[in-house]
Image: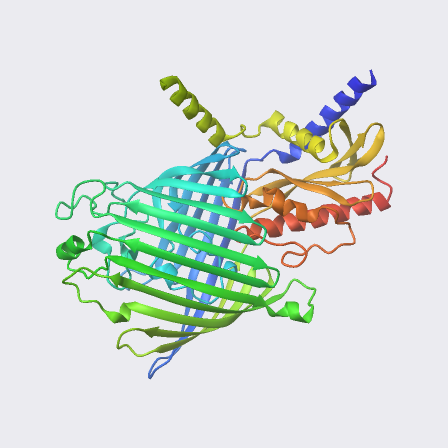
Length: 371
Length: 167
C-alpha cells in the first residue's frame, strides 16, 4: 500500500516538475554587432571607422520539436540607392524540426558548416577586430545557401551536420578572392548544381576538432561551362581544432578548395581562378588577468595569429600566377571582455605577400557585443 | 538478402533518430529517468513548494537522499532545461540537461562536461575558464548552464538554511 502511495506521489511530483521542461511557444529577439576602426600604413591613408555589422536574431519556438531561427544583417550601417557598399541580407533563416534526440531536420537558408568562423562568428568568440582573412578568401564566410539536411549527435562526443544545398556559381570566382563571389546566398538561387556539405566534429571539455567538406558543380546551367549537375566541380575540404585550457586557448584551421575545371571556367569568364585555393591559420591566446589571480568576470586576452593562404596555390597552364595572391598575415592584439557578452579589441596586423606588393601594417580598434 | 538490407536500413534510421522527442509525458518520463539515474533504482520523489519552485525531495529506502530542481536558463535564443541534483550535504550529485533546443552547443549535455560539477558545494566557486572548463563553439550554452547551476545551488542552500526544504 505504501509503495503504491509513493508511486502515485512520485508521478504527480514529476509531472509538476516536468511542466518547467515543456517549451512554451515564444518569440525571442537577440543580436550582435561590431564597430571597426582601421588605419593602414602608407602615405595619405587616414583612418576609417565603420559600423561593420548590425545583426538581429529573431527566433520562434513553436513547440519542443519545431523552431524557426533567423539572423538579419545590416553591413556597413547604411544602404543607399546609387552609392556603393552596404548590405542588408539574411544570414540564416530556417526551420528546425526535431525528429529525435539524434537528428533534427533543418530546412531553409543554412550556414555551410565549414571551418570555425562560418558557423560561430559573434565578435566575442574570436580575437582580432576583423575576422581571419582565411575566413574571407579561402572559406567565404559568412557562407550560407538554401537547402535541407540533418544535424544531431551520434554519442561519444560526436556531432554531425549534413546538408544538400544549392551550388556555387563559377561566374563569380576570382583570382584574389577565390570562390567568394560564387555564393548565391539565398537570392533566386539556381538549383542546377545541388551540392553536398557536411561536418563531423568531436568535442570534450577544452577540445573540439572538426572535419568538413563542400562538394558540387558550379556551372549554374551555363552551357558554355556545362549543363550537368556536377559540371565544373568545386570541392572544399577543411579541418579545424580548438583547445581551451583555462587561460590558454589555441585554435587552427586548414582548408583547401579544388577546381579541376578551372581552365574552362577561366576560358569562359575571362578570370584567372586558381586550380587550387588553400590556406590556414594558427592562433594562441592567453588570459592575462589570470596571472594576477583576478577573480571577477573580466578577461584581458592577449593573442597572436599567423595566417598563410594563396588563392592561386596552383594554376592551370596559360594562367599567369600573381604572387601577390600568396599572403601571410601576422596579427597580435588584445581583447578585453568586461563580461562574456561585450568585447573591446585592439590589434596590429602585418600583411605580406610573395609578390611585389609592399608590406602593409594595419592598426585596428573595435567594439563588439552579442545578447 | 533483401530482408537483411531492409533490416539494416531500418535499424540505421532508428539509430539515427534516437528516442522520440519529449512531449508532455515525455518530459515527466525524462525527469523520472534522471532521478533514477542520479539516485539509483528505488529512489522516490515528492515535491516541496518553495517560492515559485517545486523542489524535488528524494528519498531512498525510506531515508532522505537529497533534493533536485528543474530549471530553464536562456542559451543564445532558446531555454535550456536542466536538473541540478544535490545530496543531503548540499553537494552536487549531478547536473542533467533534460531538453536542449539550441541549434549549436549541445555538447553541454555530454557527461564529460557535466561531471565537472559533481561534488561541488555552495561554498565553491564555479567560473567558466577557471573551475569549469569550457567547450569551444558551445561558449554561450556553457556560460548559461554554469550560471544556472550556480544560482540553483545557491537557492537550494539558502532554502535549506531557512529550513524550507523539509516542510
